[in-house]
Amino acid sequence: MNTAVNLNVVHESEAQRQHARVKLPAKIRFIGKNREVVEQNLLDISAGGFSYDASKIPVQVGDHHKGKLLFVIDNLSLAIDVEFQLRSVDNGRVGCQFHNMKPREITTLRHLITAHLSGELVSVGELLTTLQRDNFTKARKDKTGAAGMGALRRLRAVTFSLALFLVGLAAFGFIFKSVYALYFVTHAQSGMVSVPAMQVTMPREGTVQSLVGADGRIDKGAPIATFSASMLEMLKGHLDQEQINPANVESLFGKQMKGTLTSPCDCSVASQLVADGQFASKGQAIFQLVPRDSQATIEARFPYSKFNEIKPGLRVSFQVAGETELRRGKIISSRLSDGDNLSSDIRVQIQPDQALDSALAGRPVEVSSDRGPSLDWLLDKATAAGL
Image (cartoon, one colour):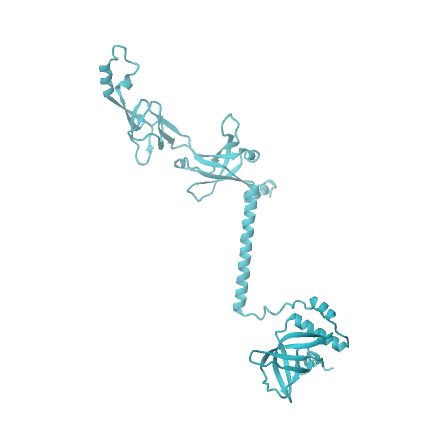
């Protein structure tokens, strides 16, 4: 059996006429600025073009023209605007092809041709009903479009798709982070680095002069400052009535006695509360000292509405102002902000996992509690399940 395929065979649909030609009574009226208005009777017409007799009018193949197709329906004139090109001239018969036909014009022309072929009468009402319908469908997608694209167009398409994907991914991440922070993260209203501090007070009324070096470090028993007080202030309460006379008081007031303030511990000066040479009253705090071996903690305030979420033993995250590192710690105590009085805030003390430098005392801190699922949370669950 011979199974050879004849490649020279042409299918009938490839050679047959694309549109049916009918002899429909109609005229073509040419329109143009540089052309006289001329009407020609059509020899035949189809959905793709028409022909007319122009034996007495000079024409040239390839010219483009605009005009109107004129029909008579129910004694009413119907005009269809068309653009066409002259494609052939044969013994005075001129063949033309339509260009840039709009959907409404195509629908009207096809309806007239179909009605003429079937022998039906066309009415104005029927034609209006036909024009109200959507007689066109969407074009099929070109499945071979991607295969016919060049390397540059493919690269551009991939880049654009990747950019859209990244923008969508970023938007999803932002929304997810916002929702997660809203439902699973609790932020403190305020926080600071706290260090146990000691105060050095003024023993007598007088002026003070600091002896602290540039590094602010003082050993235990080392002089921290000198003070000057009047002799009258020193002897106050020790003079009897005979010794208190104007001359003696004036003499004692003019005499100054100097003393020295010493450090009670190996400390660092956190702040000097009274400037050098400034007068200070008895018992007034002069220096605030921080023991060098003290451990800094974090004090933070949370709203009272988070009472069930902020408890001792809870792990929290915090960041000290001026640092980029996110630290971890544990709440070791909680109390109301105003001690025994009712308050709308809860003050907690946080023990950092890593020791903080006491020089950070007073620095503001951002504290947050994350209650959502995390890597540590998953590890704890896996350890509890014995995995």
